[in-house]
Image (cartoon, rainbow, N blue to C red; front, side, top):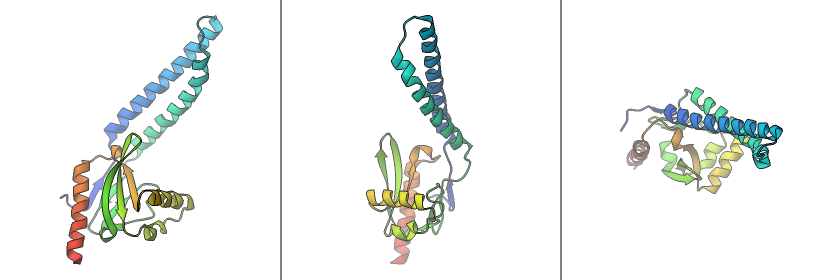
Length: 183
């Protein structure tokens, strides 16, 4: 078990790889638009579908490229495990603060679309959800919690700079340790 407090940061290597991929796709879309526009004016083989779809691909890839740059720029802690509980620092969870080990039922990893997500399940999530002052964020957490069976905290595993097995082992050990001291 790691010494507590145990801090987990973002995985910069994964973010750089995703940035390079998004930037490459962005540049390919720009080249396709430029090349097809040149053919339109030259009267050569013109593909209107490429001319139509390229701006949407450019905007989408620009959005994802900027998102990856913002993630790379984030040097803050994402998760902290301490003797009291677990803290997630995401925009939805910062107001929740420490989720006590006594309240945590378990943690599970789930596949959502193409990503693996670590979910923290608690006994009474409403106690923590009511701490969120931002109405939009509270609604998002409440909806996710209701749809996924009391999941209060979640994070994309790809973003974490840690071994998922070790992280889950630490969480389960702290849950068991808390249950044994309370009994």
